Image (cartoon, rainbow, N blue to C red; front, top):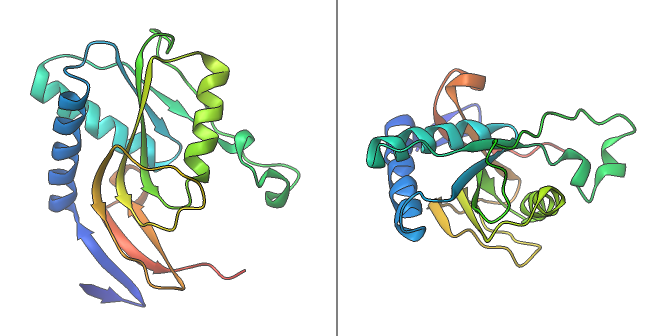
Amino acid sequence: METTNETKLLIAGPEIEEMIETISRELVELNEGVESLVLLGIHRRGINISERIAKEIYELTKQEVPRGTLDITLYRDDLMAIGPRPIVGETRLPRTGIDGRTVAIIDDVVYTGRTVRAALDEITDFGRPDRIYLCTLVDRGGRELPIQPDITGRVVEVPPGYSVEVRVPEIDGRLAVELVPAPEG
């Protein structure tokens, strides 16, 4: 494990690419193909992971998978704690919609389960999928809600006082999973 200013590299880019390939393959197998599959990436980095999964699924099946984005800000159970003017991004569903489809929620890290609960609430406001899968690059444990991913790239143990950050080139200039000191407060 490489260390820089208390930040520790947990997973490097090439290994993350292999994890994305595995997640994509498992998702296609679990869904028995891509028929009716829709990918919804959770804002921010879940969107980038979702795009990588869609690209890999295309490489595997030669079929495009409809995809969209979810910004769960207004569905958070701590909305009052984050202030009077939360920054809200865009939720964008594919033209196919989600009714009667199989939706794969894609997130970078699953921790307490509260982000996923908010995503489920938002999805049900837009329609009624036949099935919802949860796919995450990293599962760091520590659930507060009974939510478990269907497909996980890697389970990591996180010591007290640290959090897991996924870095993507589109936002951070690199592909990595890092252990970072948790923000105070």
